[in-house]
Image (tube, rainbow, N blue to C red; front, top):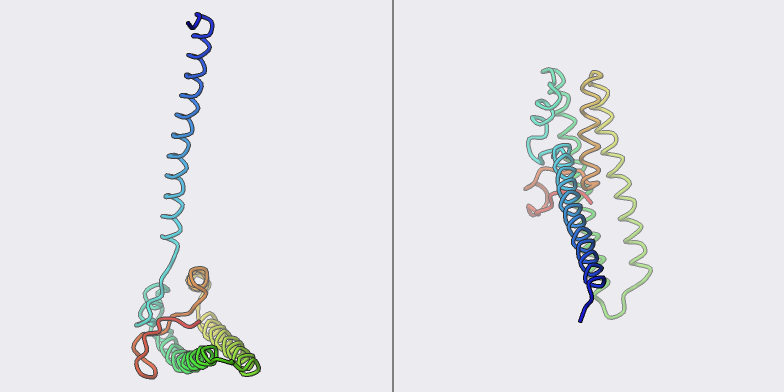
Length: 179
């Protein structure tokens, strides 16, 4: 039989374990809610630049003047033409690389040349993106510059890709972004 002293000790151990489990459960729920709130805030900050009608997006987000809209539209067209050209070249190189890798005896030198070409094209694409941004930034007032920077920062944090309008390019490929 259990004596009274042992019985009291067991009751206290049960109470302590129950309190510990209860506090851990409450703590877990609290932190889960905090994580959800943080995720919602990040989602609010995340700005999606639409692949199509990018000029309209910038006009609305930055409150562009009509003369700014015309310049943005021209820069957007130039960016799209150049970006799609580079994107298509990158896609061709990726296909070539996969084809070479699929061979029984892939040519290591050829693969190294392909990866080097991909790297150069990525660099060229980033330079085109920088040029596009700097042109727009140079046309903006201080308030618009801050908003433009927030838009690009959000876009790059999300995927480090710049979206191009879908449905254009060779064979109407379904490539939504530039890698």
